[in-house]
Length: 154
Image 1: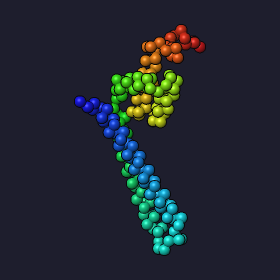
Image 2 (image 1 turned 45 degrees about the vertical axis):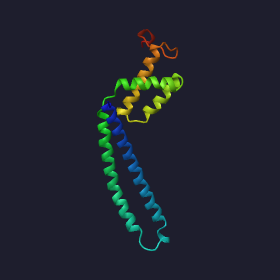
Image 3 (image 1 turned 90 degrees about the horizontal axis):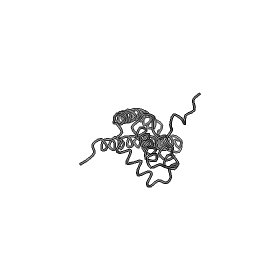
Image 4 (image 1 turned 135 degrees about the vertical axis):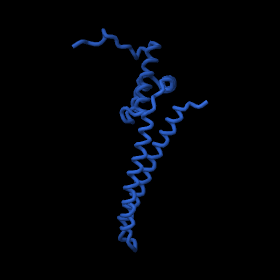
């Protein structure tokens, strides 16, 4: 049995990554045009006009790629984060990734690579929350629950 929300997250994440690859490939084409224009004097015939045509087309293609990526990301951001998935991820991080400060730093770095409120940002926030809850539950000396008495009043 497949987990449909998880499958959709994977599919949309893959589509988003592919749109970034498409954008990078378009940038490589523009680098090619820049290189040709720099060498235009060494080449017989007019290479500037075709280069300008490529630039015009790439501007339009870039807009379309950005629109597609935006729509894909919007769909991904509509999906709720599964707390069971993030709890399992937190357990694996704590098991395989070292001590608590290392786990928190790594997960926080992952979170910071995403736009606030996006699916993956919310995913990593939930993973971090689960890491802290798991450590509190096992009585880790590195994590102490905060009580009202611990918070100083102004």
